[in-house]
Amino acid sequence: MTARIDHTRPFVPVRIAVLTISDTRTPKTDKSGPLLAQMIEEAGHTLAGRAVAPDDEKSIRKAVKKWVKAKDVDVVITTGGTGFTGRDVTPEAVRPIFDKEIEGFSVLFHMLSYQTVGTSTIQSRACGGLAKGTLIFCVPGSPGACEDAWRGILKFQLDNRHRPCSFIELMPRLTESKKKKAD
Image (tube, rainbow, N blue to C red; front, top):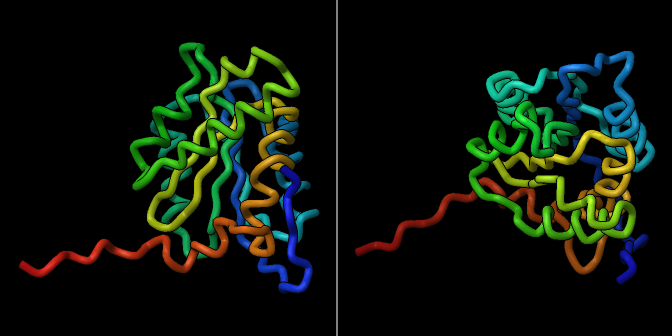
């Protein structure tokens, strides 16, 4: 299915922070973080922050929680640490923060990734979720995987003009509390 953008609606930019997770990459050697930042800005969104954290649950969780608490961040995208090695701990670090998991993000990511890397997509534990009204997406650390996630999913779901719906339309309601039924 082709993405449908309703160009009669005004574009609403969101503020997106990017966290590269790696024991070996630095801000100078990181390729995925800058690629995501470039795609975010080319789409018209605001890059709200960029950082590199080691493959360590506490460091990852601390960085993501900081952005979840920030009033100037709507979305966090992490890149790296979604594989199966002993140091790949991004899902373990981030999932406890989620109020709700976005299971469909992982499913759709794998469908798109399969077209690029075939069965190797099975080695990714890409995931997405919602924490206190902030959308969080965790993608593999390769530039190709970041491009698949952005160009195939996030570019459209983070565009309020996307039809039939997008995450942006839901943002005002993401922090609604469940109303308790009166006894």
